[in-house]
Image 1 (cartoon, one colour):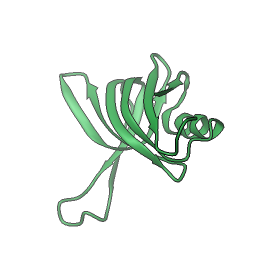
Image 2 (cartoon, rainbow, N blue to C red):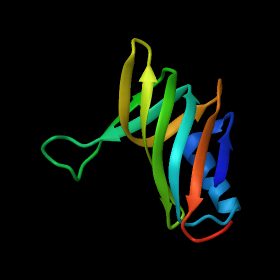
Image 3 (cartoon, rainbow, N blue to C red):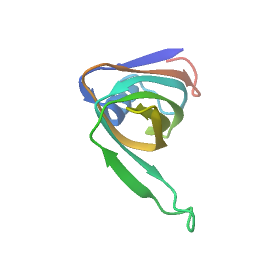
Length: 113
């Protein structure tokens, strides 16, 4: 199990950088947990699954998700729990970690790292 910690950084950039530093090219992100200060996610419109509707939120959220690293590219889907017991979910494009932390638990597909 490989653990990547993110504090005071942009989530996707940090995960990409840390994976690269460790030589991780292909891995399963089996768990992602933490809190973010803002985030951008996308979902698919009902009439064309090949397109994205990108939405940005400037509000804090509790986060959990999973994903993969494939050919060095981080791909995460997450649910963001926001005030009012609501959830915003989708493909994560960006998320700013500042107040709290984020932690990704990975299993390398390429072998030991």
